[in-house]
Amino acid sequence: MDLKSLIKSIKETQQMANRNTEELPDATKVGMISAVKSAQYELKGLLVKYGNKLLENSRAVFVSGDSEKAKQFAALPEKEGESITVDASLLYRRIADVMEPSLAASTQRALKQDHIVLAVSVLREVGQELDLVDMLMPKIPEYPLLPTYDALVSFVRSMVRNTLSDNLNVLYVQKQMIDGGTAQLYSKPTTNVVVLNATPEEIPALARVFTLGYSEVNVDDGEESTVDSEYVSKKLQSSKPKKK
Image (cartoon, rainbow, N blue to C red):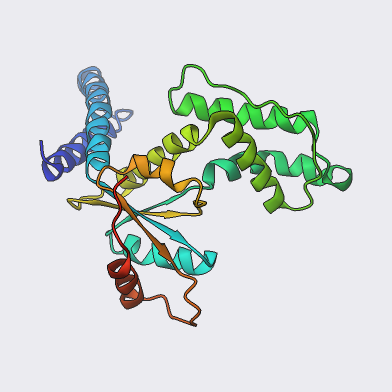
């Protein structure tokens, strides 16, 4: 089944899967409930196939430089339905967001074992979402002061990468791409993905997600450039495609 046919089947099946059966007369309710459950089951299978199609045809642009310009760069093609945006720091910020309130309330923002317990709880949640049966958990030899939120995110990033390399974030970025594509039922033949906030060290591993390869764009061009469609087009044309 090609992508357009798959999307058509998803839309049709969604209509039945989301059918409200509460107000139906008893004579037809039982049969309709059965049809809805069947559609919901079928929809799960269709969405798995759709996600696989997105992966098969995926190509990435890793955007670095000024964070605001990078966001604007990603937003333009996504708004036109031409791309999907993922954030390579989202996993680490998700963990940091749970740790931050307790850390902010502590003396001198000193990291403690309780904060690591919070991090582990989030990692377990993520593992369940990604259907991971088992996963190594971090061990911290020392507990540094983390004076800012950004310092906390950096610490979490190092902690997770030191324990799991980039393997967990590869799966998390892949899930972001599929979720983002599914939300808009992305229909382009090539799944164009803009990746924000990836460090140079992470790019080789994260690039494995994207079957058709990747390129890199830096928006720190030393100019007060307006990030518009022309700017994005020129940057993309000047970037050299790379094999993963």
